[in-house]
Length: 183
Image 1 (cartoon, rainbow, N blue to C red):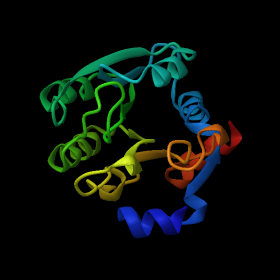
Image 2: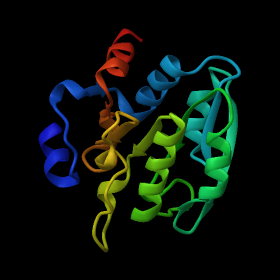
Image 3: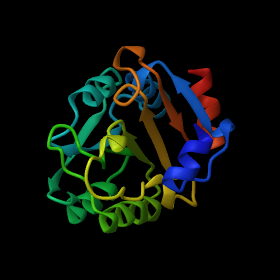
């Protein structure tokens, strides 16, 4: 997994940076379990992926929806949300967003990363669909820009290899990885 993503997506990860999970939903659940307490805030896309919202709901966060534009999140609204207290992470699906199908532009991905670092809020980049591209070239992941350990990257083999297999992974910094393993 590390070799593939380093070669194809410009990431700089090692096998120790990867946690294999039973599907993307387990990765989302572990992230929420480690990062969220009742009343914490989560930035989500509007409209957003129902499966992630359901995974996060168990931990009773306050959702902060940020509207989507044709090329990704509304950056003004994102910055307003990032300025709030108790924001634990921003959840984004930059490739073929579910349910809209939009792909976040490279410029907006860079801006999302820069804003997250500025406000000290991690980005959860969920990328189950990125390898389904049939036209155009890939857009660099937000994780590929990450020099601060500010991006948690979740991917899945379910859409490209075998839908029934439920095999996914999470890439993050070592401190979070230790917490995910305990969870």
